[in-house]
Amino acid sequence: MILPVYLYGQPVLRQKAEEVPADYPNLKQLVADMFETMYRAEGVGLAAPQVGLSLRLLVIDADVLKDDFPECKGFKRTMVNPVFLERSPEEVSMEEGCLSLPGVHEKVARSTRIRVRYFDEEMKEHEEVIEGWAARVVQHECEHLEGHVFIDNVSAIRRQLNKGKLNSIIKGTARCSYRAKAVGK
Ligand code: NI
Image 1 (spheres, helix red, strand yellow):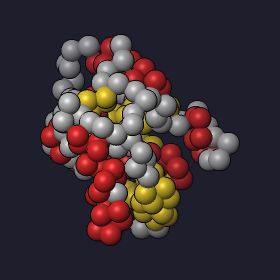
Image 2 (cartoon, helix red, strand yellow; image 1 turned 60 degrees about the vertical axis):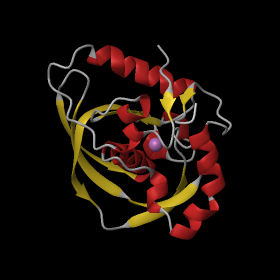
Image 3 (cartoon, rainbow, N blue to C red; image 1 turned 90 degrees about the vertical axis):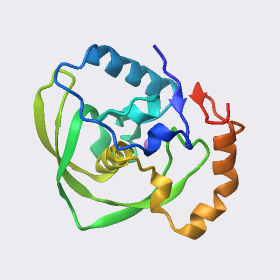
Image 4 (tube, helix red, strand yellow; image 1 turned 120 degrees about the vertical axis):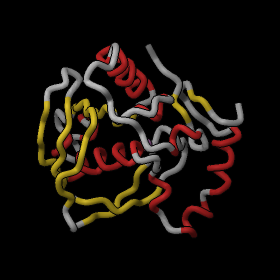
């Protein structure tokens, strides 16, 4: 089932998300719905707050980026309750977007290498070192679990330059090719 994507301005995107309990009902169905929603919107990552659920859960499939970023080949993950064990001090700045901020793209500095621990949809624990663009996607999605969005990381000037776009997202007048839920609508 395709879920509406909650857009910038929605309070749920500003909440610190709750841990997913081990007995969370229908977790697999929710994960399947999140993947379906993400693919329909042509995204490579989606966090639960973006579908209105304040939960520490995210899905990623970055395989589509493999021609430009070989580390993304086959990088499909479901991460429940992810935690960073390490983030490299080396960072690189690249342009990002977000399904909750349609039409907004800005460069964001992220660690080039991370070590992360998480559970999959079977509640099996994993620990993994992730690099490059794949590491960027994980950091972007994990930020949603803290109640932050990528535009928070850019300079005040760059944010100001995006003010018109951000206001139209809040009002629900921004162009968006997928089912979405704006505050103003
Ligand atoms: Ni995002």
